[in-house]
Length: 348
Image (cartoon, rainbow, N blue to C red):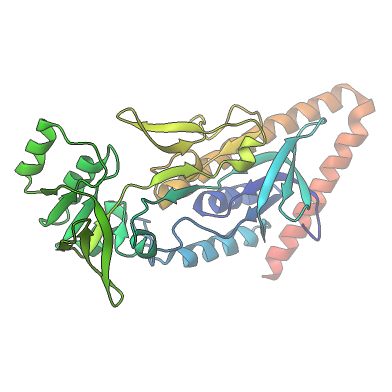
């Protein structure tokens, strides 16, 4: 997996904004870091990322490339591949196994594998996802402002979505599709905001050339729309975490499941000591800039945890000279690695 090491202070599983932010923070703290990146970011279909202060409108893949370069500049290693399992080691730490069978050890794990957007099975939805089939108004609302927008109701968030998107355009049509009927108060709110409600299932999206042009109902009627909003099911990419015994938690709205996430404390620590999470795998609603911030927060907590362990070992070595050799050896190895990194940075 690496030309130089098979054991790291931290292995980061997932190379999105959260993972790279965590790797950068840890590398700047002098930690040895390996990022295992599957190369399938959630926002890959989108042409631009928004609300990222200082990088507004940056293409997502460009942002990730810059993040990889920044983390590598401080000594973090980034490799492409799928981590499929992790296990606790008897002496402490973890062993992470990749799809190709190779493995690496880590004192701590940061898992930032994100989530999968499971889309409703309406022809045209998956094909237009991230372009003119949208979810988050803060990500795409400005780009479709003042244009005809349709809301495809598939769950308990439909009325909320319609009222929210109404902030960006006066022309909002809510297609009830497979959602349960709305309550009287909801209908009143929709009427007050001039949101039209169309009953009946949606058969497909109409596309002309490379543009979404309408929504076709099961009866054949086509209602012109230039963008459609859907509520995906947010399913955490929790496979590696599940091999450590961390089962995902159901994400519910109004008593209905809309996805899953892996529970953690505010700093990202899970129920398994030594394992942290950050980004959409634990917070499905988080945007890119928030995921980056979560990666930083988790990395800070991980570094402090390692500092505590390093201090404990040093105290034990000081009290018991018999253990001093092993402690000194570990310290010398760390200093040599850091020295090599500093030398590399000076040559850049």
